Length: 368
Image (cartoon, rainbow, N blue to C red; front, side, top):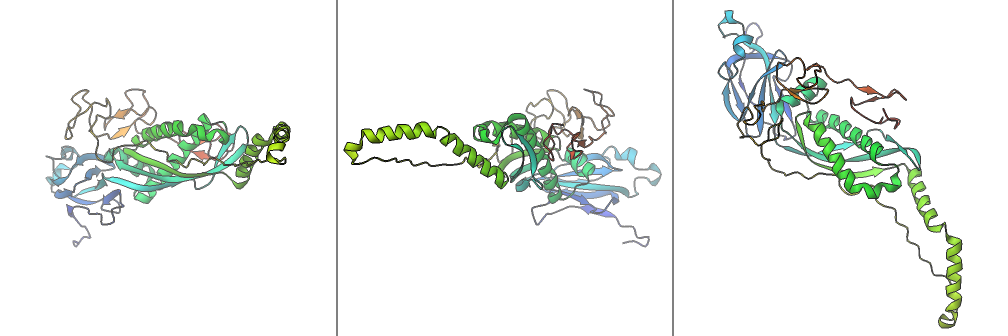
């Protein structure tokens, strides 16, 4: 601490003893005075992102790095020349953990609405776990940490839980007419929902490795209605069944010594998605692919040898998902403003707030 209450961060490193923190900012509160030439240490399974005036200007892999123009060429223009590159910079460094984070929780904080063709409007509760890892650290910070103001793993977990619940609700609304047909949709839902979530997570620079659903619970009265419906299907031809059994009993009365009806009815209600909902992915690191053309590239390559696309994604178009260059003002594919963040979508029926591209309202079940 100096006489003018200015401190200089000359050694930057982070070791997470808990193993639960996904993103850590140095300094933890706001921008700090990072001295030109400061030493940045990035450990295995970490990535460091240097931010200046709210923009990412450098990305660092494992190792020890000196923060100067050799590593961050933009510092020549960003730092003021009159100080001869000796002045501290008002900047911050985000250190991102690249390992797999297992057993993150997802679930419905409030029951989601589903319009069942047979049972009417019902509300469902669902919960489970998922595993994820960071694949594009800059995109994670630009799209989730910076835009949403989310820094801790708990906050990231809570936000992604909302995304999963919204996509689950959309999938039910688009592909399921009634809960009575749910058992026949297990495999189809496993594939479709996992693929949709992979796409959603990729927009945040994340990779979904596994997702499981532990339970889907309709209200008690809905479970009773399903039981009643099953019984009605069994007993709707009871009159014919009784006549047939009586005839069979009379025919064999001489052999059995009497007549009677022996009717054991075992009623079993199908489990509500007891199977896990997942698209298996390898637990270890997968082959490095270009985020734009999906062709294999060397692990330490900065640009794709096939299409020339930069391997570190800084931002994506909020409208079409195109990977954009750091200084792009408009999307080269659709022309949408590059830095315009998607706004929440409000249901026209009940006014509830939903995710920007939600298709069905989680509050009333109506199509948005």
